Length: 327
Image (cartoon, rainbow, N blue to C red; front, side, top):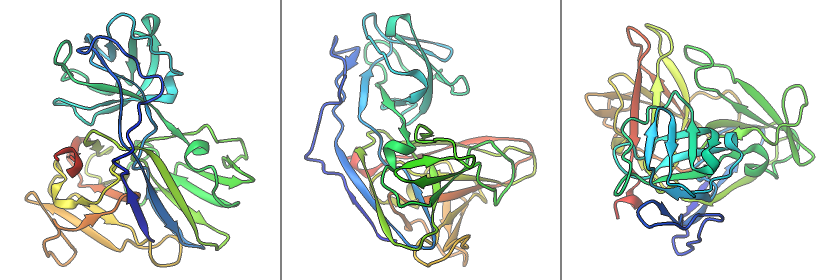
């Protein structure tokens, strides 16, 4: 698999619909745009991930937070179709946190997000944390031109405990549209930023997928959990960064956590991983216990993160800050 990434940093565009208000409360979202292209090998599985997001439609600093409600100053005028959007925190202690929007209330001044997300650390008011509102990708908007009979295997988190999990859903592309296993239309199925999936090209023809969009201007922040006691847990994981990642720069991995690097080069399906890296003592090692902190993860590639077993279900946060945010 060949992967090419371009940040196109010189192409800066204002997000459509971004609100203009007092400078300390609402900002205009002007993220750089770019693309990642991923070559798919025919008659094979290719594990991919989503490294770019759609253009932000709103960016601002919250006035207050009440549980899972984020209140912006009066007149923010946010009017998205709630479940089709998510928030991303750009700054502060929760930078990189993402949560799906469940509702918009108070005449567009309040966003209600998934109540499983802890917003207690979000700084509000003047000098507070910047929050973006971004439309989720859908299968139809992200992958509109896949060849007929291409299958997409997706893996919902929390769907099952354990390892080597079966996909939660399988979608098939046919005549320009996506369908589920019952042949119901699925173009509107949401695809999460950083979601890792398997593309199975059953026909046997190589093709290239191009993912174009806005460059995430916030760290990768992901909560990875064990679901059952004394049981390792696999999570299909992608890093939402359109640039290479040094494994040793990922913070928060626990002892005996493993990262499965896919074999996207060889032809075939249900392939064994090309490498398995293990975290121990704050460092990563390969299968021969040689240091692997310098191993680079590539944009657009998907991975399996296998959490080490814990005495009871436990969640840990991993964080990665892209180098372009430190420049």
